[in-house]
Image (tube, rainbow, N blue to C red; front, side):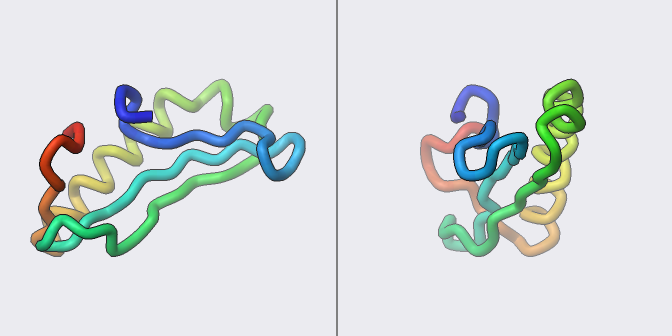
Length: 76
């Protein structure tokens, strides 16, 4: 998860569903939101890398807009 930059769930709670998620931090480095994307495994899996990279970019944009700060040791 840390190496990828996001968490992933593949059919863990619902068969055939895949989800990607990551935290968004506030100005104190505390989690304020969870940013996630979920869909059918057959749709999300082939696009995982692209979706994940776009989510990381968007999460960084949101963090910048709200003056968020990554906690020490968090990849980014």
